[in-house]
Length: 305
Length: 302
Image (cartoon, rainbow over all chains, first blue to last red; front, side):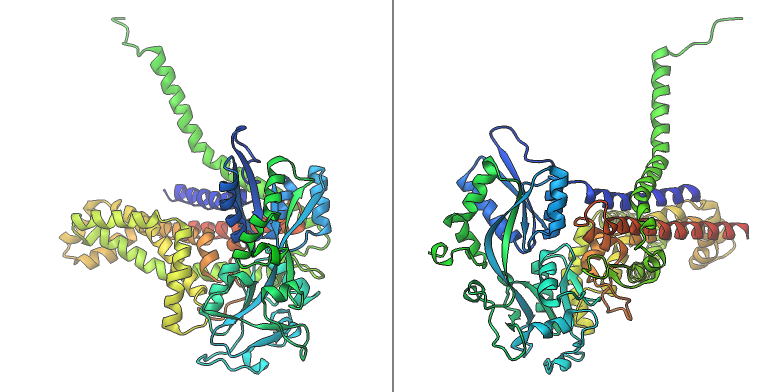
């Protein structure tokens, strides 16, 4: 009786674990299938871009009813990893592809990844709306987020949070597959690593939600995700230099220190429906949707009209 | 010799053989699958052990988990192991008294009508997908914890432990109840005949008689808690640190694998270390199971 139970326990726990692992590394669903009537475009990657990518997919249904676009998130790293294996048609990324990733993609599929910049985004620094702080500099941010950083309490930064008994800074970060995580590390931390113990959220929206529900939290996320519960800090490149708001205008003029481009990657020159889809995204119709989602289009004057 | 014994048609015998074979195959398949899972996980994990940059002691005992660092990659899972053990510990402390209590109540004290209702409700509880539990942890529980304790972040060890406890209780109740039901009625009758009260019957007669089954129930609950991924990923806050209290966020081994395996390039050290994490999880469950097996034998010998 007990023996059987134990074997069952083992089998169950094994199956659970094995299932988790297998499900994760199995290369997703097949490539664009369907008959000649219906083409499916597989899109995966950046969580920052998942909202706009879904909006594009929805709108494209009207523009081209014979094409289905399937969008999933997971992070820029996940999208690019899928592109390397050739399991998606388009990878969304809020960071640039790394040389070694392009190398692997070429080795696996024989094709060079091709980049399309589709818009811009400001990486905003969020705090709770009751936080009296109004601006922050990149070195201060690094001291908060980096390993061995000196700022661990809000009082260290000269800020008193009203109504908080413990003013330890709660760092809200992203999981390591996120392009936002990589972008933040590269542009804020430089060569340093993140301090351990940050809350690593699985999406842009979750970061803002957690910051909004905790008075002593600080986090980074795309500027399109602001809610009434949070405040976006003005950001300066160095202490003493002027700080800029994360606005569309400041992102375009690049005075905002954490402005970045959003891109799509395909394997080789896109063909057929995928090419048509990307052309449509770059057209005024696609760019208008990007602007409506709070990101910055390639040509703001043309698209917002 | 008299008339020959009536024979069944050959077809019927053949069909019976086939059915017997299929049933035997499904019995053996469990062993096969466990072995296959072992094999594949080991195969993916083992090459990293010969990697000169990989230090097994660091893997087990360092709390620094920096798999994607630019200049200093470190694979230390100690904080994650502590995360898994602490969340499981909290869950078991909460779940075992409730689970066994409910099992005793359903099996011994309540009327048949309530019994049926309770069993259906508890089975329903077991059928709730783990992502839904995670969602409850992330939204409902976290707000509740913040408003009750005044802590800054509601996704933490207590939240994860509570959600896991709710998930393991149905397992403990249904198997525990089976174990108590399996105790022959003659035991109960004998106890009553000797003038024992119902509580004395439960504590002195039924619990000792059903202890193996009850232990198995608790163990399956532990197994559920150790292996759970999605709910803890959402409810614990996913922070790599050794918790100093119930209100600290933690990250578990399972949640870490789930969050990172998707982007780790196949065949890279990061990818292999994540599989090694799988082996570590296997080892933890194995130790729990073997320890329990020994405990049961110990109890039996007395």
